[in-house]
Amino acid sequence: MKENNTTQISGSLLQRFFQVRELPILLYIIIMMVVFSIAIDGFLAVKNFENISRQITTIGIVSVGMTLIILTGGIDLSVGAMLSFAINIGGQGIVHGWPMWIVYPFMLLLGLVLGLINGFLVTRIAVPALIITLGTMNIYRGILMVITKGRYITPIPSAYNALGRGFVPFIIFAVILALFIFITLRTRFGRNLFSIGGAEQSALYSGVPVRRYKMIVYVISGFLSALAGLILIGKSGFIQPQAGTGYELNAIAAVVIGGTSIFGGSGSVLGTFLGSVLMGLILAGLTMLAVNPYWIGLITGVLIILAIAVDSLRVLRR
Image (spheres, rainbow, N blue to C red):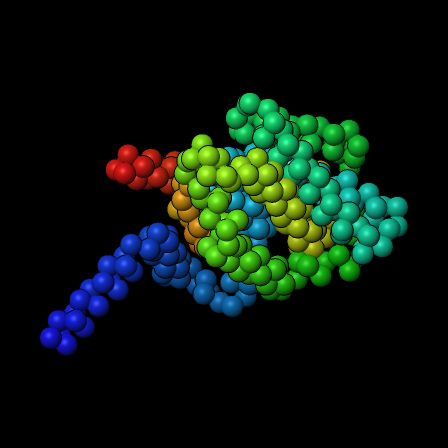
């Protein structure tokens, strides 16, 4: 009898293990690590992983905000523009000699304001978020170019490089991950995000303040985009108007590759992290193999299409 119970428990645990949403992406990561470690000498070196960890942090942080938005059934194409706007307009304070303890909060505040504008427009205008954020992306970048005239801000005082050194960016990313994994899995706010994305009208009839929740996730996205910008400054040592270009597609790729449904209502922040890691590994591996950069864009596009196709098939099966 005991043996039967033990067998049933083991079978149940094994079945539950294979039902974990993030398992496929974790297996892909392991396969990529094995392939690149065989093909590239020194790929598993600690220094290489430090470089990879720094590469994935900026996109990873932006992707966390994108995850929350996609969970509600929305999307934000302006994340890269918000990042660039926050650090370039806020960076004018560096030019005028403002201290860092004013410049950094000002940059984060700009991110919050831009996210608030996105959230207000998405919730108040009966136009899809795709169109709204496509418009704000161009507006933010247009205003930015008018103000900066396309000029770089350099040199940057060495104190600003602290957030981009060593494993500091990854530690910041890990804290953000832990916070939002807890929020999405253990709080009413997180559960309501899933309910909004799964059936918005039902959530509305259940008393969920849908507009307020959508506003909040866009504000969070703006804040995290600006925070990613601070880390980008620390890594590069200068500020450029073109910063954040393409981040919106990379963030969406990390989210959907990580298993979050593009239709909203299901997914996880942990999956987004794994998606970011997989993309970082592929980028690092192909770079070390001296592959043409255009192939990297092609591979990212193929991964996005495959991830969305798998998600569509999952929805159809339901």
